[in-house]
Image 1: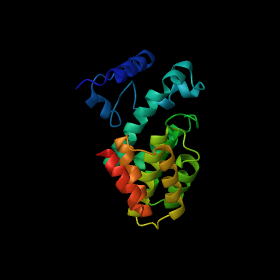
Image 2 (image 1 turned 45 degrees about the vertical axis):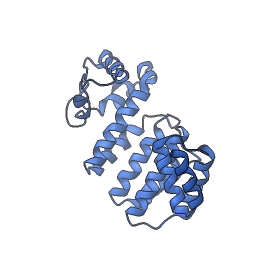
Image 3 (image 1 turned 45 degrees about the horizontal axis):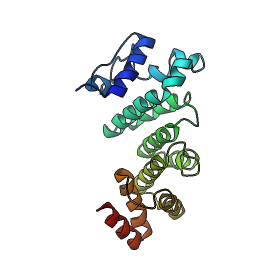
Amino acid sequence: MPVRSGEVKGYRNVRAHTGSLATTKSHYLKARRGPCCNGSIDTIPVGACAAQGLCGFCARDRSIFGRAASRRAHLCYEEGDANAARAFLRSWLTTYPRNGLLYSHLSGHLALGDLEAGVATAAFQLFMETFSPDVHSGPPHGTVNDAVSFLWRWELAGHPRDAEAWRMMQDFANSAFPRAGVAFSDMHIALTQVVAGNDAALEARARQVD
């Protein structure tokens, strides 16, 4: 299946810069395993451009590279390859602006890798410093999704509930999304309400979804 038009445009930009073009979704998803764009996907954001101080090409299309990095992180997570995700993201994030749209989202991926690898202290520190509501670099729905998914997985990994963090997330979610409307975020917001035992708010949101 051809990749979406926006991704095709991104690949054409990459081709102009590297002399190669990924033209199918399957090729794209396999990039982490083999050559792509005249090297591994790692070289897209941290190759010659980064060494030159983020050239104009990379500055214009950094969001495309951020999405590619996110997809690679998702692949690593789904395949249970936490150490590969951690190594890739730690290297990749060193060249990505702290205020970049996907910096916090990618830091959330790194925290999940640390959590899976048993490095719990580093994982929670990343949450507090890079993708909790007060510091998240992305839009509100990303803030909710990244933080709630981490906090829930934190508990699933056997760590004690951080009641203050959940209160912080519920307050942020209720403020940013007073009514239902963004399905994926509504699911995460409902989880904050379940944890808080706020049955009334949960039922109200469920009615709005219906």
